[in-house]
Amino acid sequence: MHSQPHARTHSQIPALSFDDLKKQVNDGSVDTVLVCLVDMQGRLMGKRFHAGHFINGAYKETHCCNYLLATDLEMSTPSGYASTGWEAGYGDYVMAPDLNTLRPMPWLEGTVMVLCDVLDHHGAPVPHSPRAMLKAQLARLEQMGLTAMMATELEFFLFQPSFDAIRKSGYRDLEPISGYNEDYNIFQTTKEEHVMRPLRNHLWNAGLPIECTKGEAECGQEELNIKYAAALDTADYHSIAKHAIKEIAWQQGHAASFLPKWHKDRVGSSSHVHQSLWKDGENVFFDKADDLGMSSMMKSYMAGMLKYAPDFTYFLAPYINSYKRFKKASFAPTRTVWSVDNRTVGFRLCGEGTKAVRVECRVGGSDINPYLAMAAQLAAGIAGMEEGLELPPPFEGDAYSGDEGMIPVNLRDARAALLGSDMLRAALGDDVVDHYARAAEVEIEGFEAVVTDYEIARGFERC
Ligand code: ADP
Image (cartoon, rainbow, N blue to C red; front, top):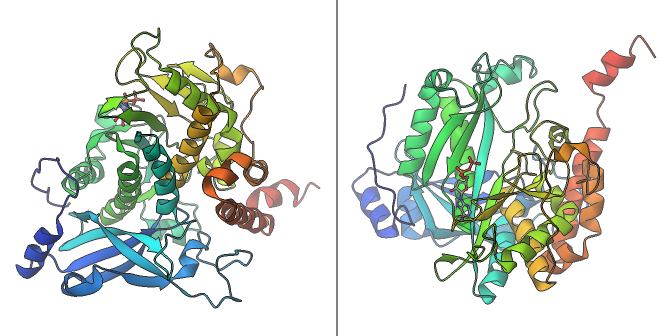
């Protein structure tokens, strides 16, 4: 078992200043810097630098092949992307470290990390880079004098065997770390503390404002909550936390999976996104004169989310498997309705009547790329405010019982809604929409090219 790190008071961003890094390199306590970008799938990709070389100059920039923002999960190089390809010779992007994201990685010895912005040869942000996409929507808000405060919840499964053992079994040996539903269960989660305690403590010491972990409503299912923060920080926290969960599970000989639905009879994993808009340090979604404490700005923002939910569903459910989660009576929403503290709907009002008032989007699965999910939802909310949309009355009862206002039921429909979205084309740019529509198409093509176990078992003898 790993030794527990010393407590550190979480207070500031950056978690590690460049000056402090130089001191730590010079006294020998740090020797490695992970220089990372976030790819289309939300993964950390990059290089391990010797810390001496990083502080001597590599902190300014390094380079990567531009295929890193046009691959699938398998790192294959599908054709059909306008931004890169064999014809263009797969050139380079600049990775420009954002030193505000410098932080220790206390679960890896002598190691710190930094996230990069991805730039082209002219120094301009690559428009389909996830961090750039979120920054572009935040810049629109800034022009209105607003900031977005967000939180994402991370649900995932812990498995007893290691990643290697599971892969060697052909993904058959999928034994969850616990044998029963562990929702809020303290005794069962005590048995998982060799993974979850270092996770909370190491992330806290990396500068992430960790709130809590808890057992979720299935064998081996866990949830990590991180305190709400400015949207870009929240997206950074999400990617770093997801990465840490996998690494710390691996260090302890287990596997952690963010696949939204790994078994048809098991509950799926989601990633709910909480959001509110702020001005001058106050939540401007709050209006104490309103019965539910909702300002007219909040109502228009939510009306935009409802109107454009089909357009942005792709960014909340980017794979074939993502859609297996959306089942009736599953706590995963199927309709674009909102409600007051009701977990059967896509958009839930939380903290009603208080300064903590916010909307929780429950559509996203555990496989979201948080930058894309937030950028697309902000675009919808901003459109709602710009169009002055009216919010319909809240839904009451069981939202699974109707079929009005359904979100797309599969990746093909979500891709069609993305391609046809004038709102997203205006907000993100045609090139960006077309880039991600191609990514969706690659997933569909890949799935259609394989013969699944299901088809064989069903038809081999009987058709
Ligand atoms: P639940 O009951 O669904 O677990 P919590 O009340 O614990 O939800 O809060 C869920 C998330 O909402 C937390 O990560 C919290 O930091 C975040 N949150 C609280 N207030 C706000 C806000 N004003 N804007 C955005 N997120 C918020």
